[in-house]
Each structure stands twice: as C-alpha cells, then as structure tokens.
Picture (cartoon, rainbow, N blue to C red):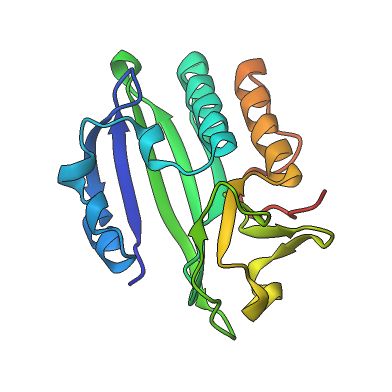
Length: 194
C-alpha cells in the first residue's frame, strides 16, 4: 500500500498528541501492527525513531522550528523491499509549542529487482541512512539501496550519511539565522556521499 499523507501533532515534550491521515493503514501494510495510532498516542516520538543520530537530528529540527516559529521542509526516503518511496516532511510550528509534522508521499516506484528484507540492528557493520536510504558497507562506501539489489544487507544500523547530515544542519542553520538555504531542502534525496 502506498500512503499519501500521514500527519501528527507533538506536544511541547515531543509526545504524540494527535494522529491523522493514513497512519494505521500504513503501519499495518508494513508489518507495524504494534504501531497503530491507539498504541502510539501520548508516547514520545523518539521511541518510534530508530537510530540515535536520527533521533538527535529530528530533535534539532523540531527545536529549530519552535525557536524560529517557522516551518522546515526536507525530503527523505521511506523504502520498503519492493518500493522506493520519496517523502517530503514538513515540520510546522503551532500554538503553545506544539508542532505539526506532515509526511507527504511525493513519488513511489517499484524497484526493478526487489530488495531483500532488512531490519534495524544497532550492532550491524552495515549502516543505512535514515534520510536518503543509502547503505554504507565496510570498505565499500555509501551506495543507494537500489544499486545494491540482492546484496542489500539484512541487518543495518540506522544513521545519517554525511550528505544528509550536512543538508539537515543547513536547514537548522537557516531557521536559526532566518535566511534562505544555500542548497535546496526539497527536490533531492541526499547523495549518500562521504
């Protein structure tokens, strides 16, 4: 199933206050029966984000949106073994330090060759970027998942690749300095370089 939009509101402590869109349908279609809206309401968002660097980057983006009182838009990928999905995240400030997070599906296409299923494993040697989906294999550098095909590792530690980390930091800096970004925050999906 392709989702079109998922959105939720965070309270000032970054707990999930309200959920809308196709959250439950997406969770069920992707093996997340334990992540239904009734199970995640009132829980911290960080509990549902894999990877310490990913949680930290998300927290920095949310804090910058609150501090600046301005939205941040950034693209990321949310792939499944069969589908490459490009998503745009909008983090929008609200009253009383609440934040609206909207995930809009921008594009989805089937991989030419389905990837083998993978799972998060903090001890895995292979790392996967939470934003662009690139995979870092020891002695092989960063490669997009579709370029790995059947060689995609089964276990990955979720991190943020250097290219996406730089893009996130630029987005945060733009909000804090109240300036336009020097690179586009949307329309691209990280090079996985570095």
